[in-house]
Length: 298
View (cartoon, rainbow, N blue to C red):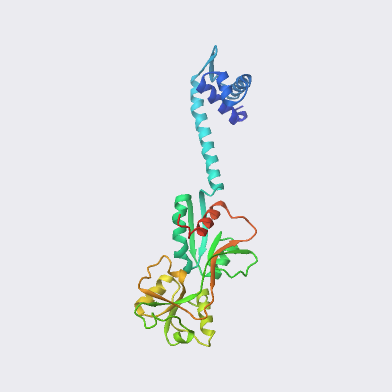
């Protein structure tokens, strides 16, 4: 019966076909010569055809044997390819990763990480969702994303937090703005300025509002925009300040902008947000590894 054929039968048969000798085939396969002969008889019985023509010590393939050898090589090749593919997934060489990132970390971390990943793991596909930080946590906690880049709240017992960078909000102003040369700015210095900020519900907006409120002030918001690019475009075009962490300028052209420290602004932790208590899939682990290595010049 054909269903009695095992992979070892194929390997033994191909060894005999290639060496044309049972003894050499046995040596190649690491078994005894009688074992090879017996297994070839069982293979022929299972197929119901003569595969090998025995003439003294030399063995030749029959027509059926040549046909079977061609297909046997294909089967073993496909098996090797399947084994390699599984190993590649296990090692994170191929796969798919769903990640979430806040706008402030997107340009500073993601492009460099993906460039490294394209060299070390070219079979990986990464889908990055841009989200506010609290939504990054929700995406990771729900399992919709395997990892996140955001502000580390350290509030969820279901998540682990790993710091990658830290820094406070700063005022970002056009180089020609009246405040661009200030050494430091207090909330009162900006209270009368029309500013452009993230919308309500964004963590950066909450931090900015809290900074103003620390001295009883309130931001005079001219417009609200969700992306860093749109905020900086308004800063340039309307000559209005915005409040962002310095990390938000990484990877972006900011030569025409001035960064002014804010008095009393507290450091913000930025980093990896990961599910707690379960190991990352190999592909996600590979992405987290290159994110950690972003400052490595290698």
